[in-house]
Length: 98
Image 1 (cartoon, rainbow, N blue to C red):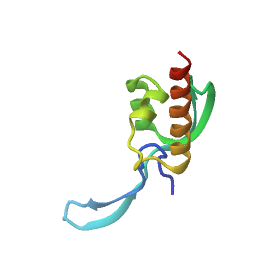
Image 2: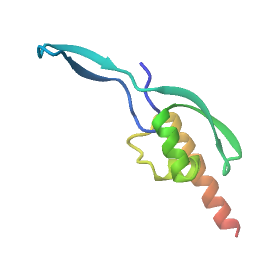
Image 3: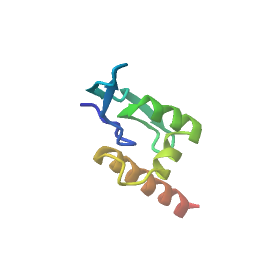
């Protein structure tokens, strides 16, 4: 069962309804891919399981770092939370140096 580590998207149960209105249970799986995302602040690649719709949202937001900082902590996986924490500490260290 694949779940997006940034948004929490996963499988959804639904009904397939025929012409005679017979309802058959079905599962729709999220299109989750294992992707390497580059973080310019950390200067490294991060490998996460991400839904394709989330990849489009990351590109629309302006990059992985901005998207991760704007995302709520409740939706993120433990690995994504650790990257977010590292990102925040790196940003605060850079701000203190200036």
